[in-house]
Length: 131
Image (cartoon, rainbow, N blue to C red):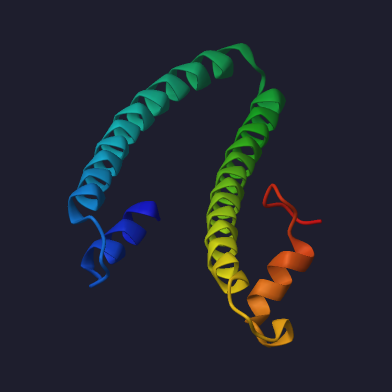
């Protein structure tokens, strides 16, 4: 997800440091490669642990172990997705705060400023979490 965002920023015509974006893209690619290697090692180790556990359990316990393991994997994946969504949401709130702060210097009717700025000021605390 981060890699896709960086690619879109790099392709945009905005006035940004292309070298910095390219360096971040390369770093993310290396991290993905490292993650792939670690995932393969984890899967091998997981298979070894499964074989050992299965040799020690009866059929009923094996079934329970499979259910436990599938549930654990599903919940872990969901937690990672939630963590990533929270991270992205906090980034968006931070960017919105910066944008809204730029409106503060203008002499205008505050009720006419963008609705999103009103929401951020009203509902979001200082640490980026809801009130």
